[in-house]
Length: 184
Image (cartoon, rainbow, N blue to C red; front, side, top):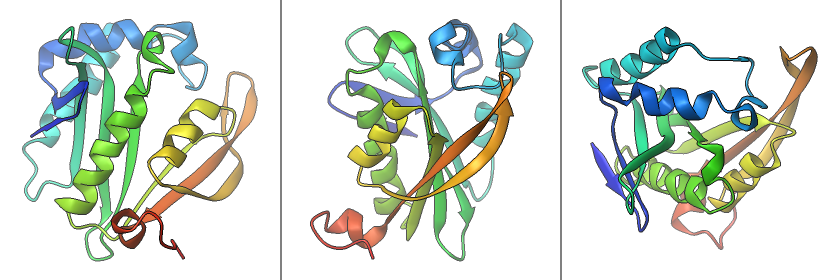
């Protein structure tokens, strides 16, 4: 599977992608919103292998793609969609990006492409996501792709010595088709 945007290529992961993932996942800025303090080569290899293995699922319901900067042909993150319920046509999205690429619109561009894939190719009814409440950048990405804040899970996750809230976001197919219309 391959998705292309103006500045990005979203492609299937390959086993050899793990060093690039390890590099950005080891950055303290990236790690601020994750429970891990330092990823290991073996852990990141397993992380990438999981995405490679998802390609063999039939029917395929999980798509996690490497985000590659077109201009440099450099892997800068990952973005994906996972169908939670085929009958209800519901899925969730997630993304992560090298902190050196934050605040340039890349996460929004990748997330918009994966949401479009969900609605236009997978024919989903609802797509949702979440972020750590303090991660204002991630919340902005979800809002920019048309998602609406649906709630807050208080003290949902414990890491780095304290509890963290999660914000929940969602978008319906009709809101994607008519962004000026109502999501209700």
